[in-house]
Length: 148
Image (tube, rainbow, N blue to C red; front, side):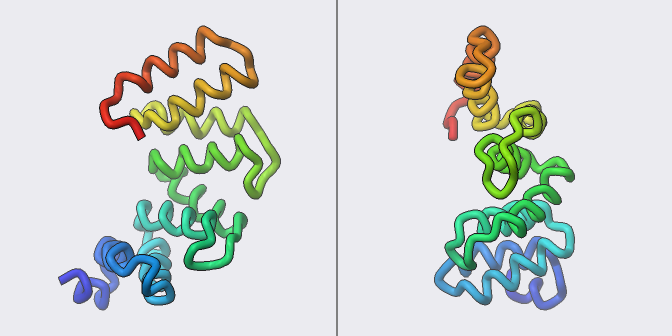
C-alpha cells in the first residue's frame, strides 16, 4: 500500500516508504525523502535536513540541511525549529547567533518540545547567566514524561 501510494506522488506515502527503506537502501530512500519534501511534507523536510546534517546517506552539507530545516521550521514543525535553533546555538553551517537560536527554540518550546526547553535553559544558565529563567525552563521540561 505504501509503495503504491508513492507511485502516485503521495508525499506522506513517499516519506513512509523512505523511512521503511532506511539507510540500507540509501539511494532509493533519499529519492523518496526528496520527492516528499519537495511536495511539502514538513516531516520529510525535517528528516531530509537531518540526513544532510549527519551525513549517513549523503555527504554532510549544512547549506542543504539548513535549507530543509528552515523550510520545515517556518511551517511550524517543532522538531525542525529545535534543530534550526541548534544550528544557530552551535554554529553548524552558520555563525553562532544566540538570539536566533532562542527565537527558534522558543517557537519549538511553545509547542511543548522538552528538548527545546532544555536548550533554552542551557543558554540562560551558561551564556546569559540568568539562573532563574534557566530553572524555570528546566522545570517546564521536567514535567514531561518520556523526556527526549
